[in-house]
Amino acid sequence: MSETKFFDAAAATELVKELRAIFISGNTRSYEWRVSQLESLLKLCVDHEEDICDALRSDLSKPALESIIHEIGMVKGSCKLAIKEIRNWMKPEKVQTTITSFPSTAAIVPEPLGVVLIISPWNYPFFLSLDPVIGAIAAGNAVVLKPSEISPATSSLIVKLFEKYLDTSAVKVVEGAIPETNALLEQKWDKIFYTGNGRVGRIVMAAAAKHLTPVILELGGKTPVVVDSKINLQVACRRIISGKWGGNNGQACVAPDYIITTKEFAPKLVESLKQELERFYGKNPLESKDISRIVNANHFNRVTKLLDDDEVSSKIVHGGQKDKTKLQIAPTILLDVPRDSLIMTEEIFGPLLPIITVDKLEDSFEIVNSGTKPLAAYLFSNNKKLKEQFVACISAGGVVINDTTIHLAVSTLPFGGVGESGMGAYHGKFSFDAFSHKKAVLYRSFVGDVPMRYPPYTDGKLRFLKALLGGGILELIRALLGWS
Image (cartoon, rainbow, N blue to C red; front, side):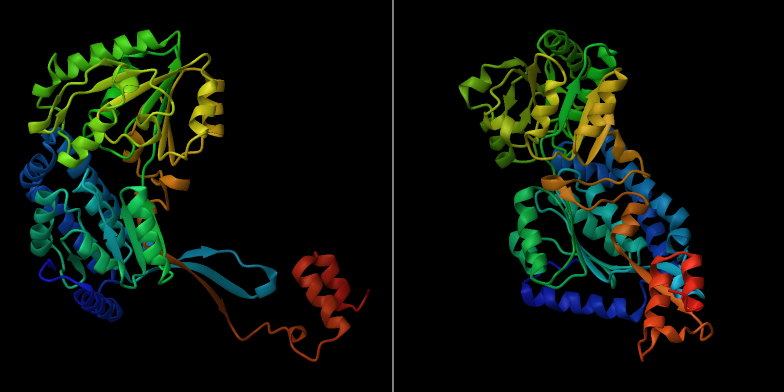
């Protein structure tokens, strides 16, 4: 159900109390409940594809293809995988024991954490709301989802669809802005999952620390793209464009933030990017129906401010057109912007793409590593040694060689940040694990009791226990025989 009327700290406290009672009752723990909710989420996506596309078009002017593939399709894929695998995920994992506990058996038992809070962003407001919810439900938790108020059409639709399809006694949505979020953050949760920027991430983490609540923070950063010269340039440019402008017009946490290439190769790269951009979006990209708009006036002003510096705006080599009334900014390429400019120190999160040049490509490693660790890093190269160096030397949430952003679609890979780009990971089974506690369980019988573990302590018992804990079979025999 939607909890929107007069939602303050008292209402949040009551909400958590209700959910904790539901969780304690055991309703959410059963395999049947989990699968039924996941199947309902899948049906929700199938039945309301057009409604979801309309909401995303209202919030972001998102093209239908991007909505269906990047948002609805990703949610459907996550649901199908969880439905298929959840019985295996729920099974205790048998593990070996040691001679110390002989005779015994042991298992790692996944159990739900309890009542969890998920705070989702505005840029992929359907996918990034439902994907962590899938993990939380699959793991058997009661859930509160707080969607972003900056994407109101999608937020409102999620409320309506959850009420229609899900068990609203255990899965709830709270709409609202900062006051409602603060009211939620005052409560004690068993986990908080937040996707967004680092500034709010710090607020979430500080609130969680008061209750020693664990958090997953999916943040962002300045995602680099390092481009070598001996490559298929057309394919590389298409994949860069797809990851940058074909992913919500640059408003994505894993979108390419800047390119590094050599001074010698930069002109060819720029020319190829221009050609492919014109093929994709035409001579006037502001008229294209295949590119999202900026989400609102505040973000439009934030992005345009990055170009206010004369030393930056003079570096535009393609694009730069803007239409404030329609909140549109054309794909824009800049060459050799100052390294200390705002556009190179803040995450862009928009359609601007600076290109930094170096004498030799290996110099790019120092540039990337001089900043905070990004959520993703991309390299285009056929050089085996360079690829190995990139993977070994660049610390990032994820690395992709010869493509961009596509690692999000690989459910066997964890998705998450490192350092200031976030903590924790999800997708596929990693989502189930993110909302589960791995409980250690050891089973013993009453046979095989070892008297040496009990007082009164003697030198003989000490020798035996030392041999049992740290020695081999010969040392154990010597201790049993009383040999020193």
